[in-house]
Length: 133
Image (cartoon, rainbow, N blue to C red):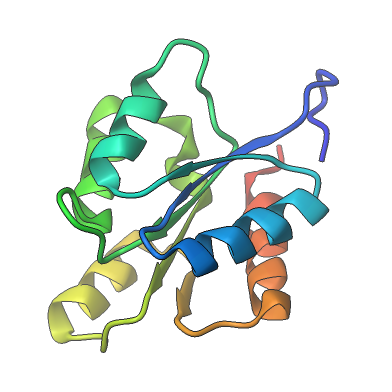
């Protein structure tokens, strides 16, 4: 996918399960994204704060070791990241009241694991469309 300025769109996948990360990279790649992967929130934070690392979409697993997806989302809010409106959450955990309240508050798309490639592509298109000017 190419931005209006001719540059390829970039996405960050925050996922600690290698097989799911590969599936996400494949799906985002077929949608035209250049993809970076971080295994947890701390690694994602480092990528997000790196010079020139601006992302157009961020797929975040809620349950990662170290800094989890909720903490990463709070970080994105604190720094005023533009990608905050193009976050997609995933988790394999049972949705408890705290996570449900968090997801309701953010209003961001959510995919429960396991999800299919088609489900992932669909939510990528929705999140990308909501970011268009």
